[in-house]
Length: 307
Length: 244
Image (tube, rainbow over all chains, first blue to last red; front, side):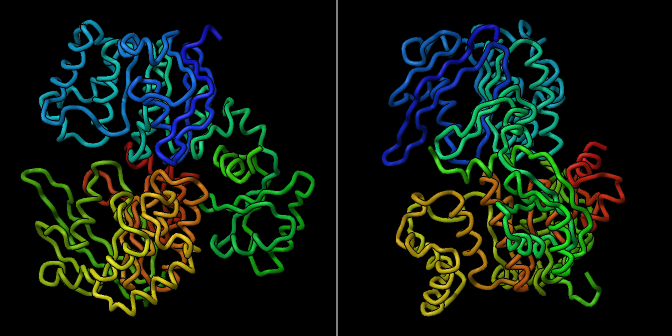
């Protein structure tokens, strides 16, 4: 890795009786696209707010580009771009006024860094005189990313940029992030969508304030401890119930029109399972061994007791 | 679904304009009783506008609409009494307890005190929430909140329940448990009208409509849509349609 961009060591944060973050430790390399994957309440927002110097941790140490989040918070603010989960631009300013405002407070101009935001901003430029509050969800997101980028930050922090965004806009947003990564920017991004993990160089799977695992998406999948069969049959709801009765099954989860059935590695037996279902009046359409998805891995980690 | 099952929602040529902007452009569709109907579309396609009209919260510009057997222009209060609604946020009051929320919503829908007590008892038992009865909503996990919000939305046995992105931000296990509850409600005869950005959830619907730019671009069973668009999953169907 060509040097560390973000360093986090034994970070803990409590809100009253709630532990928002517990003993969080990780590093993000320069130029890396790093994902925090987890549902609401996992601690993703709290973590990003600490890293962007907007919130103080209870214990632990964090640095961004070598600067300490407590001592050097001013330096960090000037070299970071931050896109909060909640739309936080000025709703009664126009698209262009918002971008100009952010450029100005960071001591730069739109024209100086236009090349950085061009590909994103061009898509909303036809609406540059529209008030930000009147934009659609997808356009707001593009404007927010443009505003976070206009001062040419070294590190970009994005808090759930794709939440509530449709499948097509999500895809386009990740294409934009890949281009920013190619330009050398370090990106830390959080998301509740498990399928977005594959877009990241490395991911931290988070739940209830803890990091359950940190790895490349490939490695997370390789470490899945079970064997999986994908079963397709007519009525998925009935099928799930039937499969859960099958002896030796570890877990059964619906995945679209298929059911993913997990076994301990040694107990995988496609033909016996097929026979069992046929005997119970299920016309099995398809049954095949498959590789785990990140979502399979996430659910298995949720079910694994803490050491 | 067979043709003998009655329609619970009928929409004919629904148009909704805001000034010169056409948010809903001649929508025509039916939803059958007991169906799980997926209402998908890109951001800004006009889903929320249509749902507001179906729930009796906003008037259409033109078109004929009947919801739960009532006319959307002249019988709005009856429509409201016969539907349930749950959105991703703001469904429950954070500073009321679990039981207080149930009592509040039961009261709004005109249930008697005895009925509310009986139903809330049953509901807690079913969800395994007995120990959380007197806990504040803000102190229970998000997954519990979503399950409770759904149960509260169908407490008054509505004919239709509208679910607006009910599983957003929910962990993957709870998301699946939530769909078990949806199936159960549909099995009990409640029609489910649901929006989601999770395309795997679109596969769980009996039929799915996909809106693009204010129009319904496709409407069929997930299997038929995948065949029609020669796509392996609903995600691919959606991307093909919305990017076209």
